[in-house]
Image 1 (tube, one colour):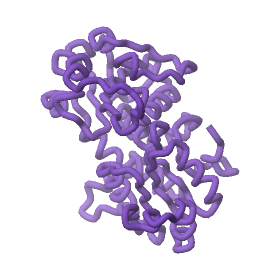
Image 2 (image 1 turned 30 degrees about the vertical axis):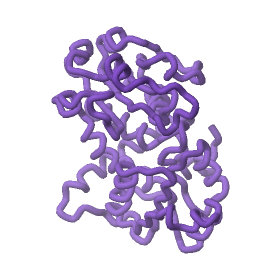
Image 3 (image 1 turned 45 degrees about the vertical axis):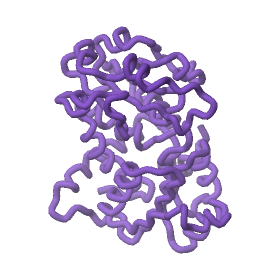
Image 4 (image 1 turned 90 degrees about the vertical axis):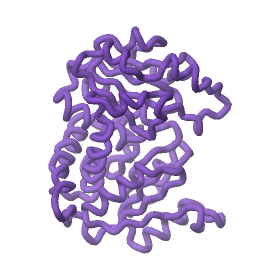
Length: 317
């Protein structure tokens, strides 16, 4: 991965991917996120760290959860937030994304949160803006979703405290999932010794051979004694030309049910990045059960995104 994420002094300039981020920096983000957790419990839910700064959410793919948590995070830092309506913007009239960003920088934009269907677009924007603004990748094609990877590993840290003794299973469509790629890079950097991928052979990655992964086609085999279960949804929107499994067949083989939890450790946690397809990749009694930390992921995600934006601007609480 290009070093474009870093400034000359070694601080983070853009957040484009987890691949290449140093363990020390990830823990620095975690520590800062920890300091932001209580902000949401205050009567006045903000701090003045980014007062006078402008955050632009540029989402070229639909998203509710990710865009909303970025917006809440920015507002809790007292920043001004612009949610660009792509369908009614100059983009729909043929203006390039680079011209749109240039115009917004001229208006005083400081950070762009970008979700785009084309892999690599956030990095192209980072190269384009130079030192005039910061770019956060909120998901680019099937490439990366770094803040999701960070918030998920932060969640694991909150519940499991350490990484070097864990077994983590990621279940579902790994091949087309930017979330899975970011998770795998984060877990590897943080020293997780046992990362298991569970799913159909056709939905397994073929380009991550340098990473020590264990691949299983069977839920029964893959979930034995794991500490963390991460569920993924079928990425139909990114499966161009791929054979999509029938939902009923997929659910029968790879849907998470209560019986599967008996295979894992008693204190195993269940995670899902959302949106969930209840009854397909996860049953409701598991998603809402005592071992589920899915809503905690959402809460922690706000703190992680606050931490990332603060670090980009060079502010600490």
